[in-house]
Image (cartoon, rainbow, N blue to C red; front, side, top):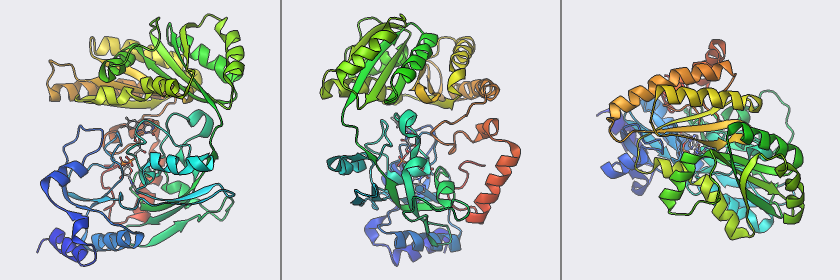
Amino acid sequence: MKKLDKFLTEVGGFLPAEQVRTDPDSLSYHAQDWSRVLTPNASAILFPASTEEVSKILKSANEHRIDIVPSGGRTGLSGGAVATRGEVVLSLTKLNHIGPIHEGALTLQAGAGAITEAVHKFCEPHGLTWPVDFASKGSSTVGGNIATNAGGIRVIRYGNTRNWVLGLTLVTMDGTIHTFNSELEKNNTGYDLRQLMIGSEGTLGVITEATLKLAPLPKETQVLFFSLKGFPELIGFFNACRKTFPELSAFECLDHKSLESVTEHFKIPFPVETAGEVYALMEVENTSLSSLEARLEKILEDGLILDAVIAQNEREKKSLWQYREGVAESILHGSLVHQEDVSVPVAKLPEFYSTILKRYQDALPGWPVYFFGHIGDGNLHIFIKKPETMGHFEFQESARKSDHELFEILKHHKGSVSAEHGIGLLKRHALHFTRSGPELEIMKGIKKTFDPNGLLNPGKIFS
Ligand SMILES: Cc1cc2nc3c(=O)[nH]c(=O)nc-3n(C[C@H](O)[C@H](O)[C@H](O)COP(=O)(O)OP(=O)(O)OC[C@H]3O[C@@H](n4cnc5c(N)ncnc54)[C@H](O)[C@@H]3O)c2cc1C
């Protein structure tokens, strides 16, 4: 009997049959994420419904030397949840309980499989929120958000996911169930293992439950959309807004090509009458429209803005957000896309942007290249779509070759090759541009401590 069959027979002894799938459709569906450039290849999909079931599965997999890929909403863009070499996918989606909430402590218990947006909806009637927010929130899960230390649209005000997790229940590959930090706000008793797990991309342990930290829901928000002549004006405008609006909660950007992609894909009109080279979406919390307009007037005197729209009601706010949140989906729809998710210190953005823009124009003339991102925290997404006339292989080879120069430029600017999407399978070759050799050795040592047999999400982060 092969080791996989022995493992599945053992698992069948404690996991109900409907929680195990091996049919071809399930295998290809659950072995893939939103990056969609890798060929899925999984042996089985397991759906545990409790921490205890996760523990039994991992213990058995460790004994039988079975590779396991933890999986949440599979909205990842680095191939972190993709099974490519016959691994067993461990989907945490059944662990989707939410609550109880503690309004004094500002905490919420949530299962790893709880959908991010469902957590927001649960907190709303309590006047609270979990401020981890981005376009894929309708499908992404709490476990995936924690495993990727997700960023998103409100990082300039709230920081990344790691700021909003108090405690973790996590299972290591030998089946041990750990509780890291429980619900403590203060706990200076040695290394913070909870923080080590956050952003570890499912390579050290499987998160089954978390105590999330909550923030008050803003009473009022204002949303504005601007068109600007170019990137230097955008950064000048951002600097002015940062000084003028301490309540700034989002400052996002998209170039003209990205805006065209959204308007065409969702069949919606341009939000502004005067087109620019680049656009900004700004959100300010706890500020009335009149106070916002009064303060904005002074900035507008500088002449950085070509055109502006201020949302007058909730419906208009949602509509303006769609122009930014719809960008990735509109580009990814039905196309092969090479993606970059880079960051540089905010002060270095204008120089970085003009260097890479010229570089893409020279290296990939006429290619559809899109720039957008969370510019307030120095994070730029660069999506390169396969030109229609080019073959898949030729496209992937050319795009990969162009990466090298981009990463050298990033290194020069002390930037990161993955700002928020993680390393997964797709950014492994680039890791050394951002992390030093000695750092990588420490990371590999940590991986060995938690997973000595190298069975948990194998090949992710490191080869
Ligand atoms: C349209 C779009 C917009 C996006 N915008 C943003 C953005 O603004 N900011 C951002 O940071 N990301 C963004 N993403 C990427 C993605 O949504 C995030 O990385 C998200 O946190 C992934 O959550 P998930 O549940 O889908 O995880 P998955 O894709 O299922 O998994 C991601 C990684 O986490 C691991 N993992 C999943 N669950 C667990 C668990 N319970 N225990 C241990 N490991 C686990 C997986 O093995 C994998 O390595 C976007 C994606 C899309 C498609």
